[in-house]
Image (cartoon, rainbow, N blue to C red; front, side):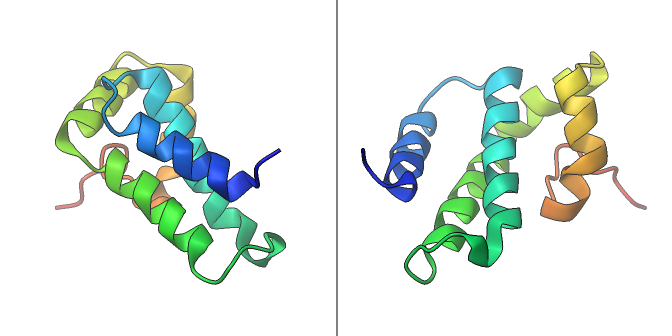
Length: 101
């Protein structure tokens, strides 16, 4: 079985060209969240966790992905609502963090 980082790298590469959906946004955000919280628990080569986490965050920050997330939040999708309250402020997910004036 390949190491988790190899699987996550392959997943991220696979996710990049896919159409944006609320479900895909949720999954990718949860993976970024896991990698963010895992910290030193993962015995990965230095910088790999951060690089893969940042890859997910970069994907989620794309305009089309953000539009889908906002639409899901507006439709009161449970996953988007949960992400907006629990994950978005910590990770800076612009689609789900309230705009401040």
